[in-house]
Length: 397
Image (cartoon, rainbow, N blue to C red; front, side):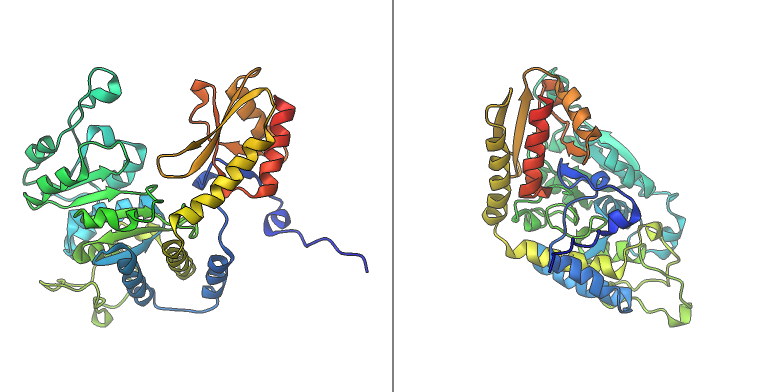
């Protein structure tokens, strides 16, 4: 009997070409590949109905178990976690303030070190916060070695300050511990944007352990959950305030009861209306997929995960041996190996553009293009795709 070809996949049936993603799990490229166990959880969850607040209560317990936080919430991405976290700091558990966002008086300022500004902080501004930059980053301007210091953030705190936002990177200044000390000494919470700070696995707990009040992670990158998921974890009252501004609140006041895992003292004055986080809806299938992925991520040691990526990176480098280019496998700051390729006869930009125009289109990290380098991230690659990349590069170079 002849062996029949496998049926076409969903994207072929929709008439959408697939790509080779050698850039990493970026949203614009569809993220990474889901483990079969995660994909099965998503499909299975779609077959039943469940009360979302009850499902999020269980999610809170699982997230707390793996992060050391008091509570957690599954969000529709890390940017949604930032928006909801900012909203929680602006309103607390006051349903009147929740209904007034993005326009609230009084405590509506969120401080941020100037060197931490990036376009993802648009999510914080969307909540209605007046984002206030503190300090000068001479080290990035090339004018000196200094950056914002902890005492400057402390000095900038006033009666209108609702929180301090901090973007966690290996090079971030001032140190998070200093920022937390200054903030907590004045009764102000700290929101940490740790969207891309996994791996290492230890970072699931590191920021909460340092004293951060809210921490935001991407669920669709290293964790391996659905691409449109994220995690907000931290203090119970703040996570609860975020949840109330996310949940569907179309319920008769007489029938509404604040979820037990959210309610605190003093009691909530009444049922909030739909909150500013309502456009950030997260479905049962996303929550189920993220929880399975988080449990898998926590169970797999970093070295096992990184060894698999390194094998693909080294295979790509080997396949490019002898080509007219310089090839090097680098260890990234986060432990993810990358393959850096510097063409000898064509510009890096030319090669990147040609790879994207091919069939299948190949997308690479263009962060080093001004230095003449293409960077290949193996986290979304298979062995056969590494061979396709090598063949295409040899033809172009």
